[in-house]
Length: 355
Image 1: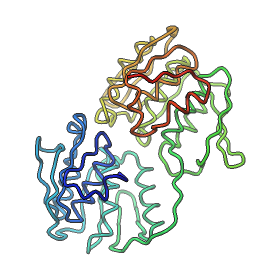
Image 2 (image 1 turned 60 degrees about the vertical axis):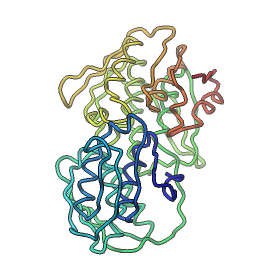
Image 3 (image 1 turned 120 degrees about the vertical axis):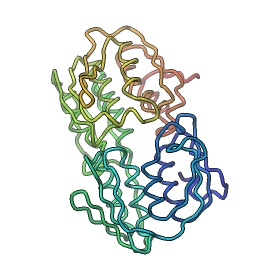
């Protein structure tokens, strides 16, 4: 995002960064910039029609350069605001909603979003509104209606806190290791990030989190034998939790995993494939319900595929606390946590990152 948002190049290659693809599509469209947005082969399979349809309704001209509804696509200009209210599904990706929210202040009439259906990843919508407010644009959200006024952003100092998604892997280490005392900097229990839910989930999986001297301290405690969790608002935690449950003998009853099918890979299928290597499984009971069957006996070693998905690599890596682990294509972590393997090595886990 940092490299591309101000790039003078016409072709913008987001590689495998879905958030960057969606946010920049909205920004370039409303700013009237002529850009071609493209990415990896998997990115070309990730839908963007809901966002493009909304931007076209607002007045943007956007053409698909391949398959309709999917990147690559070209932003060709903004004819002027045609409508002030957009209806968009709330159950597909909060990134579509955040993208529209952030461009709302640039529109002469402002923008009202009516979110239809169930709203997923709601904490990320709340976080977007909070950050916009910090930069001078108050957003109001009442039920399923988001209202953004036409108003200029104002420069302001802002400290970016650590990423709770990345922190979740250290909760995994704390849960799986025989003994553990881990301290994480620049992170707060008062966070608006949806993945801060890992604190509550991991209480059931044997990890207690507490603040001390500005650090979040993780310590081991007793686990439950069975957990139930709805991942609607924190889908990026699903792989992490599934692996810990599988390894610690905890049966899981999960809902809210539907969006995992359109991530960097089909994460449900990927989890099912890789969990079976440690004698566990993720059973799909219905379109909205899954059961995690834990392992009764872990193998001494296993090699895990990553499916070009950073979270697959990092979700399975903490198993190295209790067994020998080989992660294929470890470099995929560069998308969100490029220093991951170095941090694990400093934790005392032998790491070889070839391939």
